[in-house]
Length: 250
Image (tube, rainbow, N blue to C red):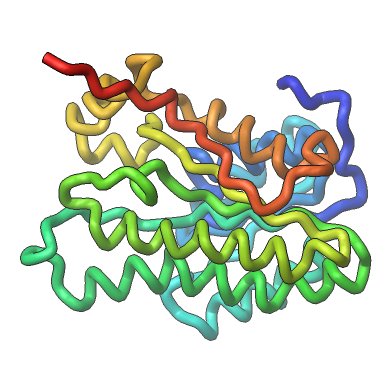
């Protein structure tokens, strides 16, 4: 890992959606850097596995289950996490469909988990960072927030909102030494995207690199933004999507 020389010993990190995929990779990397990691998820068994494996590698971690679609449960998660120095809003849902095929419940679910939950966590945890005069918040976005994708209206719109909040929060909390950034991930190989089969893999073909990302590659970008190596980076949306192909005349 490029950032092994850095240390987060004595700092606490909360990573949402950290029982698989990108979130798990982020939690593992932060633990390697010495952070005490709060692993969030909904599945107790998967959470216990991640914590056990981090501890076996010499890291420190604990699991807190919470339903991010429930505002009260999000606030409970923030309280259980305690004084957080690094917040990674990674958890998200993506249920693709046309506008006509997206019902109210599906639309609301995207905004509840992808936008409202990060908003509540920042509202609850950033003031503590301000009091301590330090902190880093990294939000997981998607290239679908700026590049229209068929069937990705609700998902992309919720992430576009998160990108704007990233810039708003950077302005609000930056004077106190709290940096807020986002990573716009491209198609990534995770247990979640595996459910979409060949479609997910085919998305890699629209990137300049011609392939999907591995979860660890996106995690590298997230962890970079969380560390002092990115000490003068705030309010940024870092593209980690493999590059967008140019439009060519035919």
